[in-house]
Length: 313
Image (cartoon, rainbow, N blue to C red; front, side):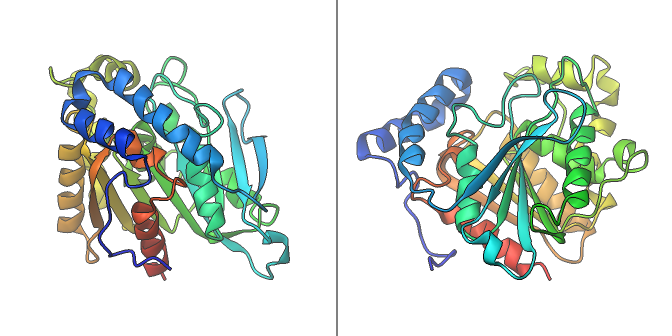
């Protein structure tokens, strides 16, 4: 097994020319997020497509609610049927700046996250949710709550241990997962089922429309036009409300302010909790590669998440 604390080569699974390309893009990431994101996806797609997936059974587009986007994919690890006990599960919630995105970008990216965890023996679930045009705040968080409730109700069907469900939220998906678990506007009206831990990857934990935020318009679309409500609608404001075990990962080259907000979230959690959260910065990685690299051969972050999962009693 790979030592999760060993040194690693950032972007090390890529051919050297592509690795150098992404390292060169890194400091300029925020200047063309859409274009740079496409470059990252183009680099990683053939790698994750070629990775063996033998024995992993996938049930796609399982409905957890009435809307067409209320669907999820379930990835069962090899030999799951032979297991004599329920399995740990991870629930992955993708990003997309609140206004776009799908649980599978091109049949490979985001699926790669779940394939990797399934190869490690976990049940992995990839969640779709409604976007801001039809489900503004806190609609995305309500969808995450509904998906978690569905999984708890169907734990036996999917061989899940309902006491060992871990949630991973990336970017806007991190906002939805953190809101689902921390924000009283959600937890008091429709409490989510208990989760064993939360991993926030490059998460949008604060609503802001600062001039340097290239996603200011999507933030406004989701959180509303009244900026006086942004603080109370930000997961960052509600860290102290939950003791759920927490891990935070940010890329070296982030969408503007996301690394800053991740650090603030960590500090707030540190102030209010007896057990400090984990905080990892993925050197060399950017806002997209931090998830696109899963199942490509580079597994430092994945191993750190497994270590986090293993540390939860």
